[in-house]
Amino acid sequence: MFDVSCDTILPVEYVEIQSISVRGELGPLTVWQTPNTFQGKHEEMEEWTKVYDATHPPSREMTELVLDPPLRLRPGESLGLYVHSALPGDEAIVYDNQRNHTTYRDRVFKVLPGLAHLSNRPFGKRGFWGRPWRTNREFVGKVLYGVRWRMWSPNSHHDFPVGFKEAVMTMLMGCRHRPDSLLYLLQDEIVFFIMNKCMWDCWGDEVRRATQPCHPAAALRGTASERMLPARLRSATSARSLFRSSRRRRAPPPRRRRRSARPSAPPPSAASTRRATTTRRTTSTSSCSTQGRAWAAPTPAATRTCSRSSPS
Image (cartoon, rainbow, N blue to C red):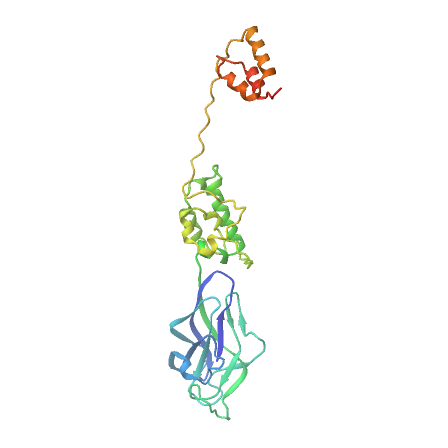
């Protein structure tokens, strides 16, 4: 009797336990499972569910016990497993003494030490030598499991490795802010589909849990795809975000047409020049601009002089 768990920070959808292999005298074997842990349930039969029941001959090699249906664990979940033989004695199933705090561990799956049971009745309270439970024991055998890796989406962006998140941001920058890139021709949904089909470790497997997880919410601000994000991510965009464009790409601004220079007016006569100079000396800016509208064609020099005039 021991616990197993899916203990990982990698983008795992679930772990599926397909079979358990044991060796020994075997005989009538049953496999039971309980949610979370076996602690406090090792004598409570109603807390367990039988998932295997068959009879096997003695074997020194590993004998596989195929579970139907398989057992699934999502990240952070655990369950207790109990492999029992109806043969009397201590040789039905091989086990070992506990040597470490963890029996086995890899990137996604963990097996913990547990108890050995010496009774020929499942969850029996009496054994051949009195109390049947032996503490500080380890499972000896094999656990065959498969891993269903998570596919990328905006909702699961913060669960992926650092390299993958940087690749997503680079793709979004290319399709929004780089007109010289071929990615600029793609819509958001096409970029999401491409990244969804990429394996999670294509750009390395380094995963860091940040206090403020990296997410593409800023890249989706103001787009229809923003609805794919949970509310907590929609409001968490950075003030210095590089991604502020809408779903429909803005058309490039039209080129400004160069206006042809207007033909210059003929130079005013000496009399008109003297009148403009006299006006500047005796009137304010507002009166000068009012008088300027009555002129037929003031020269640029006269216009600049009026616009900077001040009360005398």
